[in-house]
Picture 1 (cartoon, rainbow, N blue to C red):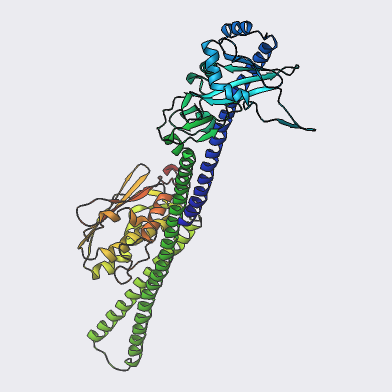
Picture 2: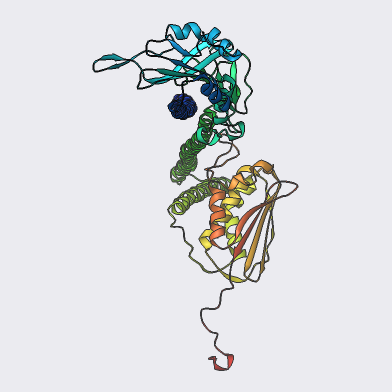
Length: 544
């Protein structure tokens, strides 16, 4: 019983660990896909912004006033600049009269523009490297990352735009998902059996400051992200981080363990039931084997006892006959002859009793064997219940007299009825044999009979030690005896079983009736009134 459970537990544990690992992998993959989707949103935003700026730079006029008006009309532009083909700054020209915004721009980005350090690395082509004609450039200045868009015109001049930092960040945040729109991952991952798997996505800058975050989870300040991804250029110095509820993460895949426990419980229950059944079946077979061995021992002992008595008293009778032959020539007194005849009658009586006992034992064994093969049948004929009782009791009179057991009859069943006489004799013989064996310490035996319609009732009561209450039903089971020790209580243990089976074949039953003293057995038989075989001849037609 334990070995299959251990094997199932080991395999189930490995399967559960494997399933939990797969659940974590699926969760990581899903979270990575969600971060990639967010990165795609950021990439699409800058591509759209780049197309707008490309269109805007096509209509830029190079006079300072026109550029200033363009900047004032477009809130996304913090400053615009123009470089000629040799890299000289055309606007804002340091030699011209500049406004405050232009001077601040030159102060922050002048060196960068003079050395062309804002331009990205050149792209590699089939003929070496070629300068980029448009794109994004980043500059860390002031509050953090600043974005510059540049475009080189066909004439060779370069136009650049510094984006208003607060504005493009606000526009980017507007493109990102809102908290209420966070997808529910419970159904996808089956990670939490009691609610939604809470997550949070955070966009942080290069200084690890949170720019924007969304999702219902409030992670701990020092909690590490489960997934970390760099957005596409020009925000490649920023990070996208995703956090997951640690409690839900710890219970991820617990459903597999729950299923494992359920399977183990079900398997254990099946194995327990099978083991219990096997154990009970084994015990039953062992009990039956023990009963059969005990039955063989009891039958052998029971057969041996009457055969020994028959042989012994037959030998005594033979010795008596030899003495008679030897003393024929001698003159015997009448008293000696009478004594010798009495001894012979006593020996013959014992032989008859033991022969009857042996016949009952053999009849019980044969009847039990027929019942086991379902071959036990009745052979009904016309008989009188009281006559059968008198005949069977007469066979036990010598044994009862030796034990000073007085038999009292109250017989009230004189009608001719249909019954199996041999079966009834066997029933009564088994009950009276039990009285002889177990109730011999008593002094009285009462036998009553009665008839009512088609039912005949026989009651046998003794004043012996009785039967304990715990054995009242067990005594009718095959091979059950109050004591299995041969010397304690002789018998095969099938007498009452056969008696009940025969009464049931008669359409009745054999019961042990509760009584204050001794044991009382009640026999109820279905015995239809037997009709005459021949119709009586009328007196007018009778021959004188």
